[in-house]
Amino acid sequence: MENSIHVIPFSGKLLEFDISGGGFVAADGRVRGRARVASGLRAKRPPKEQQLYSQPKTPNISNNLLLRVSDNGFMVGEENYAIERVVSDLLGGLMPRERLPVLFYGQSGTGKTHLLQGILESRRKLSTKRPKDVLINAADFARFFTEAIDLKATDDFRRRFREVTMLLVDDVERIEGRNVVLEEFQNTLDTLVSCNVPVILTSRALPKFPQPLSDRIISGTTIPIMLPGIAVREHFIRSLLSAFRVSISESAVLLATRELAMPIPAIYGAIAGMICKAMSENVKVDTCYFKQFLKNRNETARPSTSIERIVKSVAGYFSFKAADLKGESRKKTVAMARALAVYLTRRETNLTLKQIAKFFGNRDQSTIRHLIEKIELAQKNDTTIKSQLITLMEMSCK
View 1 (cartoon, helix red, strand yellow):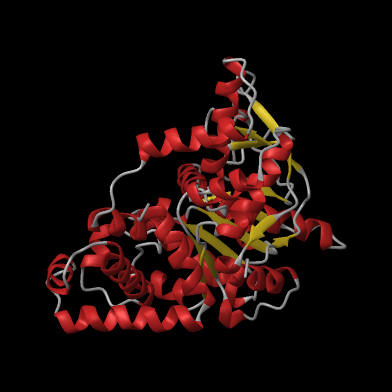
View 2 (tube, rainbow, N blue to C red):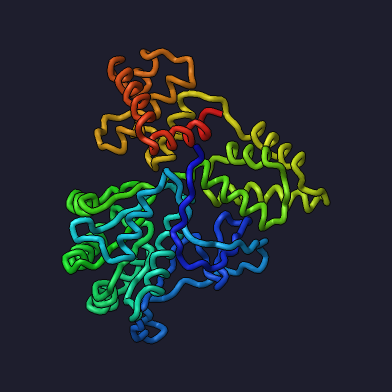
């Protein structure tokens, strides 16, 4: 049975995708590849030479090839249903203090920044009064705090980030190792959560912060953002082809859905690149051309199936390092990723249990057998595991 698609109905604005840079630019001209400062506050700005909260400049995009595509929100399939529930609780004011802060983590291209921007926009539309919500990139948070120290304006800084109705921080891993900033960040987080003010964070992986801060974040709600599953990819590919006014057969669409197992921006880049190439060659994009494009792409880009390829794909999917899967970590998310990698290795290669056990840190063969049996049973009863396996097989076992 085909997975159903849910859409978290955010702003409904039009997005303009920038195929030359792999990111995308909104209709208002702002770059959406990285979070920009967005706040309901109207603080007085210091003189130009002492501006504490300088805004990033909008890049020149005049030379980029853009396509306007309707954006109705954040698409979720079975692999990301948990996100929908958490966002619903956040927007409905139903998130208790015990579940704060919220951390969304996933590899680049899974839509973390888009998710934060959508929550911010929805909050502004749903609120009767203009909320004092702040969306900021962690690197900017660190820069502003450093500037505040230099200007002896830390009180102003704290008022800006602690007297808010919601704080959304993108790419929190970018302040790893910056102890002074981390201390300020933890104090800000603790102050807000103690007042039941929602704090929402994103990261490419679980951040490696000092133990007290890591424990504080993990004690809240941590939600992995998985790569789009088959249903989401098919929906996006159909929408994209329609926007480009390209008509191809049903079999070609399904083929593309299977072959383009990657983040949404990468799917866009692949298809848009093909269409631009066809335009430059003055060739019409039909079913035959589309299938040939996919075939050529696979012949040049598809590596042979190997245990290294599988482990790399699984680690990337969960935003870990390959070494994490071969190591001794017993964290639940790492252990599950390791089990999936072991299962796929056994299924898709000719390696023996002994060889697999040696590759995964010289483990006991009985441990490897147990992991394989665990995943075999789990995929029968857990739709999330089943969906993850399908995506991972497409990524690593072509």
